[in-house]
Amino acid sequence: MNRKKIAFVIPVVIICMSCNNEDYLGYTQYLRAKADLPISVRNTEEWKMAMDTVASTDNKHYTVTVIGDVPIESTFIGNYTRGKKTVTLNGNGTLSLAKPVTINIWKDTTVYIDSENLTLEGYNGNDSSLFFVDDATLELRNGKICNNKGRQAIWVHADAQLIVTGGTIEGNDMGVLISNNGSFTMTGGVIRNNKITGGSYFNGAGVYVDSTGKFTKTGGIITGYDSDPTSGNVVRDEGGVELVGKGHAAVVFISEDTPMLRKETNAGLEGNLSYNGTTNSRTGDWIVE
Image (cartoon, rainbow, N blue to C red):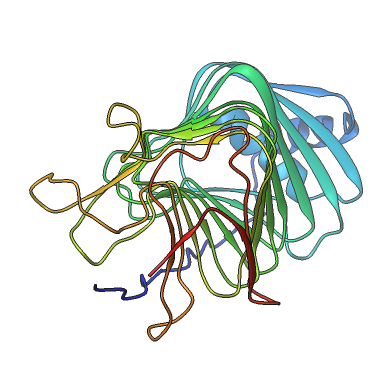
């Protein structure tokens, strides 16, 4: 069995905070004064101004409400040079990538996605994750993260954490990737219908955990093709044929010389799973071979 580790490219974003437009500066100052109050976002420019405001403050909480369909380009939530902050994303509409980029959640920032009617949509042909979480926290409570074709929906990296208590992650090439001491805790929600097509090099369409990651599932559902051919997460070859032994629902890659931990069938509400890369310990119904 080919168990090569996947190569990943960390997205880099160059941020420019300067602006000479008086109207733009006036609006961001207005938003800054509204910290801890709702901000409505109806278009690309309002999203950019809202995120620039979040990046320029510290120890604040913002509630950003998406209204309608809002296309965005490369963006960031938070700033490495500022202190802790939290952002709640809610609304009734779709926040979608307008080109192949990523939404970066930076250091010491916590983001909550918490509206049943809010969709975070990726890009068809993306070479980056929809969300890249770096030394920060993302919590999916309600809503949908979907349709990032080409890469995973969420990449949790460098001591970051992902918490899923509700909502849905579906229609991406991969659901969740955990690397470099990142952690993923799942107590609710659904990860389904994520489809990797790329041959024997790839594993883990629902959840992929590297040797340093942490993964704990005590609730929710992660589908797997072997028990759910309709909406199961699945790994296929270049011709679209389902592959055997690829961890359709979940995979832990430990090393080239160590067997993967695999989950091929549905991990349902009571299908608890865990892996801790620090202690190299696991629980649950993993296949080890």
